[in-house]
Image (cartoon, rainbow, N blue to C red; front, side):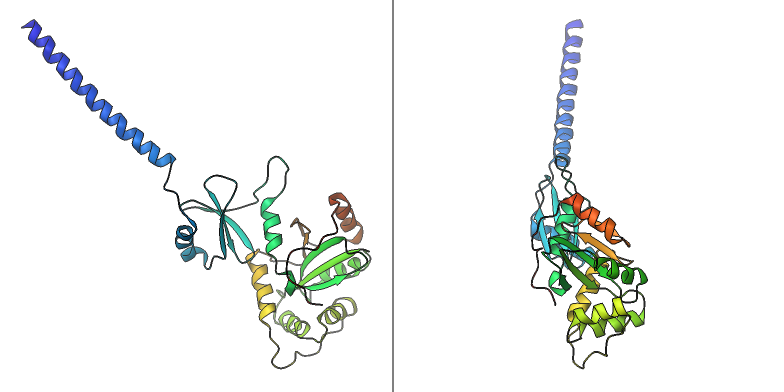
Length: 259
């Protein structure tokens, strides 16, 4: 009987080991499924995210495995491969310290819709979002006039009420928008009423861009490459920032701006 009992016990141990082995296989398979999700493509990510984010203009892989760049207008966000998670930057290159998100968003700015002014060589580039009734924007205009070799792109961005919206329309529709803007900001001369039939689609696009970027106050500035400068800075501090960056004399991306 002892031999038969030992045989039975051995058989039972064998069955338990087989069961444990099968369990281990299923657990390993489950873990592999979690570690290596199904590879998604651009169309799948669009389908997953557009119901939540609205129209997506571009989807592209980043240098980070499993992370995709998602562009909506001028805003850059990131998503996982299945479009289940969305997050915002800044995404920085650890080796160089570059803010890759800021650089990408700067490249997406519709500079052809900005008022462009160039002084001297224009080697220092500044982009601003400004309200025509903003007091600090008017102070900024006086400071910017002191800076030589400046290339300035101004987005007329009315956020201070109905009067700002009216002045923005009038400036946008003026025969010389840059002159109308400078008269308003430097001399306090309100622009003439907008001409009938003026196409304001570009102005609406500027307002949409500012909202996408979360700009709620003016002036809001960007150095070339996308570094943001929030609020008023005098000429001395701006020139110091230009010096620190050692900005090259290059034309920012975008179509020909308004002059």
